[in-house]
Amino acid sequence: MKFIPLNTDRIPAIGLGTYKINGPGASDIIKKAIGLGYRHIDTAQLYENEEAIGIALKGSGVPRDEIFLATKVWPSNLTEDRFLPSVKETLQKLNVDYVDMLLVHWPHHQMTPEGYIPILMDIQQQGLAKNIGVSNFNITQLKACLKTGAKITTNQVEFHPWINQTKLHNWMNGHGIALTAYCPLGKGRFMNDKKLDEISAKYLRTPAQIILRWMMQKENVIAIPKSTNLFRLEENISVFDFELRQEDMDAIDAWRLENIRIVGVQAGAKWDS
Ligand code: NDP
Image: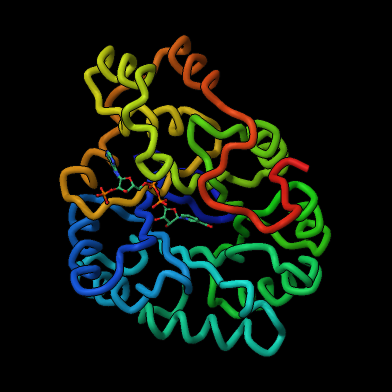
């Protein structure tokens, strides 16, 4: 496993995405993923699986401090009266005293970051979150966060070979903010791409492994692929025993498209403005 250094911590560069892993069987899948070696789990208040994750963590037998647990606060909870109570409820559901990463899931559509990032910092100071960050923030919004004095450790955004995040990624690298890639496999939509198949055949690796390896060779990139399938879970974490040659890194870089996004953004928000 590769680890990305954070503020005072380090984060496993491949984590388990858990959107839509809920309902009966969810905690079993997450427990099995931990058994396969996943040590970073990404959830959110929105995903309705925090209780299942809590059960999986306890049942896994892996000590709490060996798991990097990240969750996200939904925008409607970013107000002064709801932020802290919602985080306490989240911790209760997860059955933990703290999370390793607490993210603002989306920028609030009315309040600016100056309105809620200080509350996030306060929650960190209370010891309820070891690291803090944001998700779906563009450069302007990140600048507003940094003005509050917050140490933003990551911005979780859509990232895969078919979306151009170069400007945002470079800016974040310059400010010590790691990029956590959501939908790293493009929700599985690009798996039949002919160019990807060619590289995959060359390395005798699956298309998903090529994409994830490409990310692992980039600076300060964390990926959180989701799978409910045991074979694919194992496949997605087995990308540390081969290396893509620079010519193939460059070839994949060249696939990026402008204005392609699988997950919608709020009106007016652009990643790199
Ligand atoms: P992903 O890009 O991780 O793709 C998941 C899809 O790909 C599933 O259909 C899965 O099917 C399939 N898949 C997984 N592994 C493989 C493989 N090796 N080969 C072929 N297909 C595969 O999409 P997600 O939307 O789930 O994104 C990942 C995570 O990012 C989420 O689970 C969530 O934690 C986070 N996220 C955050 C957002 C935010 O706003 N911050 C927004 C969206 C996601 P199967 O399960 O059958 O294997």
